Image (cartoon, rainbow, N blue to C red; front, side):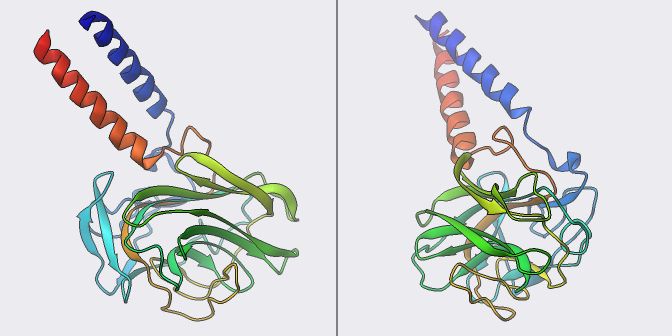
Length: 269
């Protein structure tokens, strides 16, 4: 019985780690930026070297994958310099925004921005409002994409991994081109189109310079601060697949349980 359990455990470990090898790593990103916050700063983990500038005083804290940053919901944020990989280049046919976060209070009646790029004319945004996490996209200039906002319910003090994806888009609105993923699962697909350059500044943890929400709003700077932890932010010009979008809780809890099981089994051999 012990031998069978050992074999089963090793098979699960082999399958898990072989699947992990498919996941995209920051050093492999050719076009885009990744902020892991391991050093307590907004250092880009890709070769493209886009370091964010702190607003307020986000603090280093323990995350779900190494270190994270804690935002106070009042005056903490990160300003991102202009980048040809985000706002000044393009147009981009594929884009993924992927964020690992833990919000202190999802029930707030004010918006809490995780990431925003663009402004009133065109852009993308990920934010929390009234117990839901939203991903939004719009382009009201080159083509008439008035915007789509997809959402899913979430809980306070819980880790989630959310992703907004533009997949194989063109310079027009087409069905099923804008996607929302939560915890490695597709939430919904809606119409979307190509991402063009946009001049307004980008931000993490707050609105750096204008955004559009599901109920419009978002006009202004230094508003809608986020309260809670952010562990990772990926902004890459790829449409990531399910193999790349690893659920946050699975990657921690599953390995923890296997490690505990393995330890007990070794002690009995």
